[in-house]
Length: 216
Image (cartoon, rainbow, N blue to C red; front, top):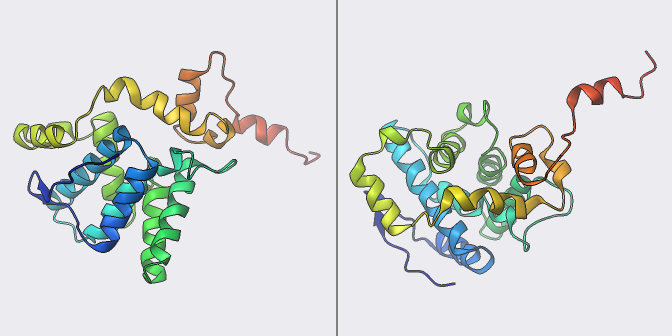
């Protein structure tokens, strides 16, 4: 898959460093056009939120996080037993290790990706973590939609089309972890399994307590 990545969208500069270029190449190689457009929209949305909130953050690390945040759904990066968010976080960390980034940056990107679906936690962490979470929430669930200007909204969608996103994102999620549905225990992706699998039985936290090996 080849695309013409723009230099800027809606006033947001798209990182063009060596790290950013190589990350994009991995996304194009192992992802899909659908995931590419989603990931780039997430970056732009997150960056706009950062500007609006006057937050200080590292655009390159935010970009790499956006690029890798759903790569754990793809066959190349998907593990047999880990949450897809962790697979994407591990892939990004391994990628950045090769560029000599300090451990603090590696951990920040790992957290940013691993926590991007963790409601009630991610928004209170470092700026990059909170911003990626906000960008995902805006693209997937429309959180903060009214804060976008119509001009920015149209510019972003024109550059990175949604292409039936609402209809296609749920099966896209499911395809990424249908072989390991137990990894959705305790997180919002269990809703995807319940939507896609008739009669899906969720693992229950209370059952885990009551069926523990403790005698009392």
